[in-house]
Length: 159
Image 1 (cartoon, rainbow, N blue to C red):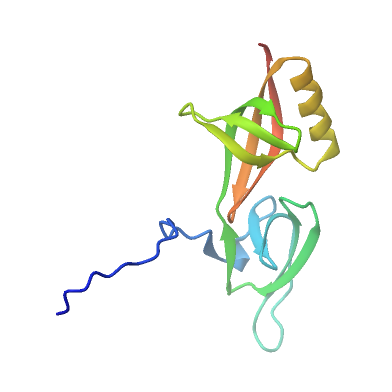
Image 2 (cartoon, rainbow, N blue to C red):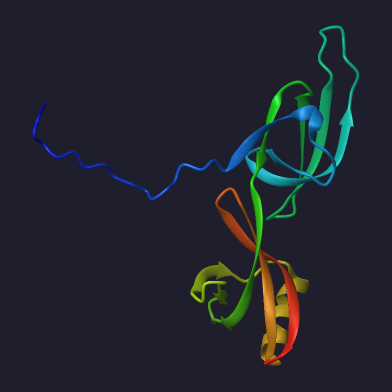
């Protein structure tokens, strides 16, 4: 045995997977699926009959949960496809910086300053106008596959 110390570079990742496998035939409308490497909400599922080579196929139409783009995929219904772990978390809005980042208050009382304002114009104007009026705003942040984005807003009254 050598007496050298071994040092490993750590990226501080617990190794939790960003996705989990699920049989394509069991994915339903309004569920989530990974299409072309992007987390998507399923808006349409159609299943074709088995052909002469024996596999029924599932045709998925999904909308990217972060960009809103429509994507499609066809998978044999017996095969596994990736399903993203999607989490929604509520934070209280503290501040909006000039460069488009928001400062949020977490449940533990810490601040979270690494999120940009949403790209959705309606939500963006609601957040900016509500904040300018001095209202207490709760934003819902959706996270999946290492990405996060503000997706909803709740007004809990004036400060």
